[in-house]
Amino acid sequence: LTDRPGRVVAQLEERGLDALVVTHLVNLRWATGFTGSNGAAIIGRDERVFLTDFRYTERAQHEVPDFERVKAGRDLLADVAARLSGRVGFDDAHMSVREHARLRELAADVELVPTAGLIEALRAVKDEGELAAIRAAATLANGAYEMLAEQGLSGRTEAEVAWAIERDLRERGAQALSFEPIVAAGANGALPHALPGDTPIAPNTLVVLDLGCIVDGYCSDCTRTFATGPLDDELEQAYELVLDAQQRSLAAVVAGATCSAVDAVARDIIDAGGHGERFGHGLGHGVGLEVHEAPRLGQTSEEVLTAGNVVTVEPGVYVPGRFGVRIEDLVIVGHDGPEVLTAFPKDLTRVG
Ligand code: ZN
Ligand code: ZN
Image 1 (tube, helix red, strand yellow):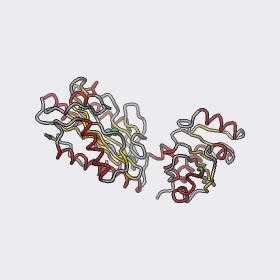
Image 2 (cartoon, helix red, strand yellow):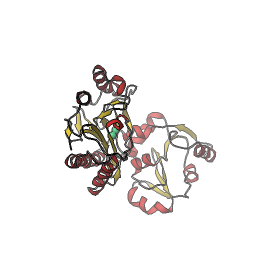
Image 3 (cartoon, helix red, strand yellow):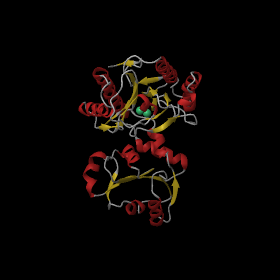
Image 4 (cartoon, helix red, strand yellow):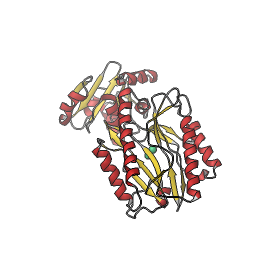
């Protein structure tokens, strides 16, 4: 495995910091391996201290072997503060105002420096172990589409189909879902985050199926849009437009590309197809321990893609009151182009 605390220290040196306090649990898991619900770490040039309360000391022995481990009170801040000195970074995006005030009081001689996003930026570049978990989570998601293609959709309710997806993913080894599956038929498909409903899915419409699951803590996220029988030309054309935008923006996903430029590839195609104002969200997002993380692929995103990023490419067209189309692949960014993890075909799948 890569030396994650070492990557943190390189950042500290660049910013002239003596240490970083890690309190946000997702960042703590990434930096230390700890999967419990109460812990903190102090990472500095010469120190790697992990603090947790009595409930987790045994777990920490297995999960955090490379850190000096400290058994602290359930409120960890007093023990954290006692070990700080100099210029210390803290996570101003996640630490509460109350915790910050307390830390300031307890460590009055310490200069607390806001460093939100420091670990998130490091998390955006995955190591081999992380990629293996994401590949496994994506493979399970692929299987869910095969199951749906085989079973068909019309006549079942969105909620039934959502449950079938959840059961299938769990039975085949997912530890949890990345999010509640989106099963959005007909007009519901025009709501990018629709909740599955209780009306039966109609024939001759489009159904947006957005799903993902978690393996070893890492998420997958993909979308396919299926047709329940022959469609109106308008729907067919919208599907082909989104497919074209998806394939061409996917080809632009390469290390060194600016995220906004990749977004623009898809947006220009959808604009030219007359649906410009019906693609209301960004092209994609990073995926890892969280289903939405850095980098963000959007119109205003100045981030640059790096080899080892894992991102989604998911253009959509949403026609209010009528239908929606979204096609989302999960991909690993490489120097020569993307490694696509979503294997299920993108040509329109027609089911019963
Ligand atoms: Zn999705
Ligand atoms: Zn997504």
